[in-house]
Image (cartoon, rainbow, N blue to C red):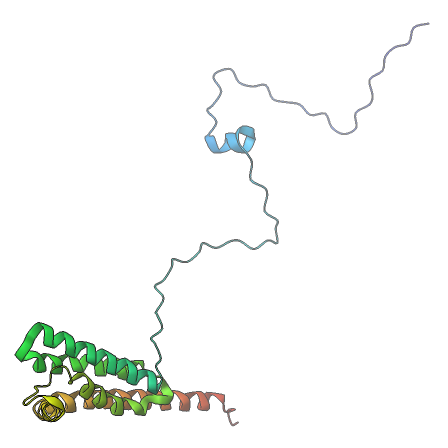
Length: 198
């Protein structure tokens, strides 16, 4: 007895494929070939995942200025002026006092700028002391010995008084400006922190 083979019934509409037109196949772009299997496909991103934004270009960070205490400012200014006095004497000889006075001005500016807020009032005090310390190597010793050195210091301070007063004035002006800006900033913060009256 013969049994006829029956094919299993297929559910749903039958798919019909359209015949491929004759001729050469169109070239496949490289990106489509990678996605189709020519390369490693990228994993699909979930619908709720946040998109990555490009990183912003690196910006130049402002270097924080050093904040010196009153003692630190005195040491910094005194040692720097002593080194400048020795350098001026070695390089310029008789004209060293004028060069030393010119170099004293930027040292005063740096000292006043690098002091921390709580020690601002020490700048006009340490600057003249540092000027006198740096004047020791370039003071003209008249008769030699201790008395000659003291007389040379007094003469140097008298002849270079303009530079001394000028540097001290510059440091004082910078200190006042910084102090005023600090007080204004504190007042703004206090005003912002107060609740608005209805």
